[in-house]
Length: 283
Length: 306
Image (tube, rainbow over all chains, first blue to last red; front, top):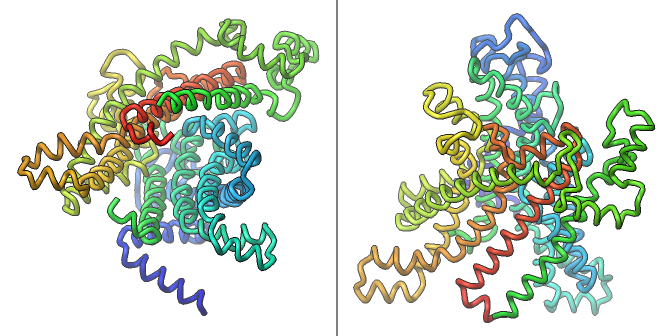
């Protein structure tokens, strides 16, 4: 009951914050499309029809067809599944691992803290997409390797958030109280201290999904992501580049799909940030 | 004051060590025998033995590591496909990336700061909202898609600007805009937030109540202070651009280092991959160092704390 009430409060706040509401709607829309892909996509995403290769948007093919005569609309719809599942799975994994490592580092401190955080400093010394590229260079392209790369790439962010919360919370009185009442250290850390970092982690997680989609798209574009013929927005884009001159539509629709999805998550994350950290409102 | 500088300088030693170790281990982390990985499919066991010998893969790891790092700079480490020293392959490409990133960061800073200041001085008006909208679009746009759109518009449709290559200053324009958009968005947000914070402080109120014209207050007193955190963002973003330029480079066929690394992944030219990644990461570390030191130099509060 209490849970229901606080959810209701959050929903009310989200609907009041225009940005969060728009973001939530966009995200919801994309998620629904991804789930319903088999039902709503007009064609099989892999079905080739070489007689209607590179046709522009028409009644039969709303978004036109690509070089193999595949329906771009269907590929965009199915692509939502791939992008969303990979990015959210990777972010989820990196939250689990990152929060665990960051929390342990901060709570137990000392040499453990030094080792863990210095290692993350090293990971963060690879700018932007480069760390993901290095990991793909090791593992080779492919779906599960892509998830691994994005996960490793995002872990330090969450570790830092968890760490800073735990560092500031662990000296507070309720921790001593819990310890005196005989709670185990692990219990104190994970049941009482860590929940305090929940809201920054939710905000960061949402923004990270947006960023993960961009990174996945970048890797896909470089040919280091999902390999054809899987319907995926960015790999499709990199194929489209070849035919830009004659058939610009092949490059436009997958791009719009990535752009809108990423924007949805960014709006939602920014809005959540305002809701959960009222002090940030004027920033 | 000197304490902080020395501390910060010492701190980069373990980072550089870690970065170089990680780059070195790329070849050893690939599943399978490194010599076989380098030799590629269809190599005979004789080929593999030759490669193991040539790359010193039979030596202890420690020795291999020093040979790798030393080999980059002494020219002993050679690219597999061209047989040239990697340093000779990498340096001109790195220079191209630095040029593009420099142009990109200048564009992003000028545009971002301008937009941020305008947004802050017109808070909660339509101008502010437009600027916020631009920022959100900027960070949500897949950079290579933006590049494709710019090519479609300015190269294919209008035929004003070249779609790729690096010939003259004109070929900097489209890649520069592409690379700078997300950064401009971030800088604009940062400048706006920083300006709004400064404007609410006492010394600005005093300046205004003393009758100093608003323009002078904004551009002379407020902006100067507001730019301190922006400097950090600009520096960090420049570092990110060195690595992140790889997408822009690929869209526009820019002969940069990131693109060379990606191409080398496909040709399995691991010495190039490793040393390219190491060089980009190292320059990122040094850019960060420079930013931190610069920040301490312009913000005396930070120095005194240490």
